[in-house]
Image: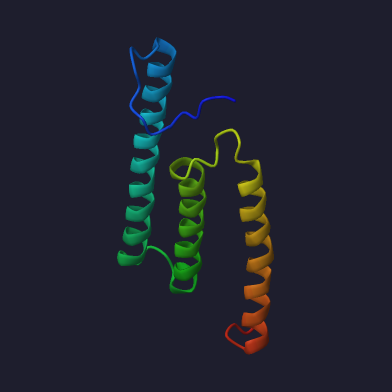
Length: 115
């Protein structure tokens, strides 16, 4: 049997240059993504506060930015872009594609949105 290795245990010995570059690249991607998310939040707040966005498009604009932020958070901060996350991706996207039309159709049926 193979010995179980705790992934949270501190590394023993020297870190290889490849691992060091990979960790630095991951850290850089995390920081860039975080700054982009702060930019999206500021864009949403400023667009609504400055009344640059028409009243009829304010809620869809905010929801669109929120959807983009959810996808970014799932892929970069929840590490769904990494190898071995095929099935979690399948279940998340299947749930989204089932829930979104269900919520939209129930809103139309209940008269929350009238078209």
